[in-house]
Every structure is written in C-alpha cells, then in structure tokens.
Image 1 (cartoon, rainbow, N blue to C red):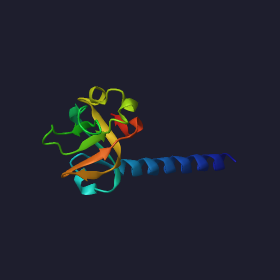
Image 2: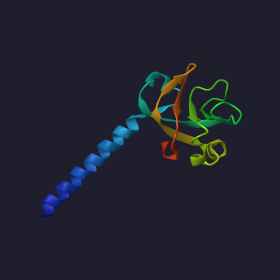
Image 3: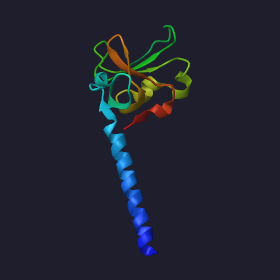
Image 4: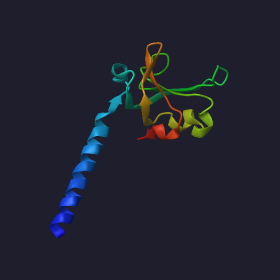
Length: 124
C-alpha cells in the first residue's frame, strides 16, 4: 500500500515537471517573437518604453520591450476599452521585466500581443 502511494506521488512529480518544462519552452525573448507570428506564446523582456495614446483612435497603450520606440522590437498593446482592467499600465510596468502571453501578430513589421486581461502580463 505504501509503495502504491509513493508510486502515485512519483508519477505526479514527473507530470508536473514535464508540464513545467513544456511551459518554459514556450517562453521566448522579444527578439525571437518575429519568428513566431501567428503562434500563441509567452514573450519576455524588459519594458523599455510605454505610451498611452489617449487622443488616438481606440485609446491604445503601448508597452515596448527591450528597445525604445521608434526602434521597438516587440510591443504589448492594450486597447482603451480594456485599460481600466489594468489601472495605470504604463506606470505599473515601466522599467520592469515582464512576460506577456497571447497570440503574436504583426503590425507594420513589429510583432505584438494584444493584452485584454491583466492575467496575460506577469511581472518577473
């Protein structure tokens, strides 16, 4: 009976390990995102610049990883309709290392993920 319990525990530990490994492999750098367009992934990087374009159509908030605008290599986009869920995202994330999860798309040659829920962005 004790052997069976330890066997079950061992199987669970291995399963958790493999699941964690699978998630880690899906995490990519901001520079790598351009090679994963159309895929759902977790992109990690240092927030280099932020901007809330309150007067632009859709009231977007831009969070650029690893390089400042206009030389950004990856952008997290939060539309104005979702902004209240994030509070003050440009202040909350500025200067921090974050990971964002979602589908990577391209906007004018720059890969981006549109974040509609705060759970998509994790501060490391």
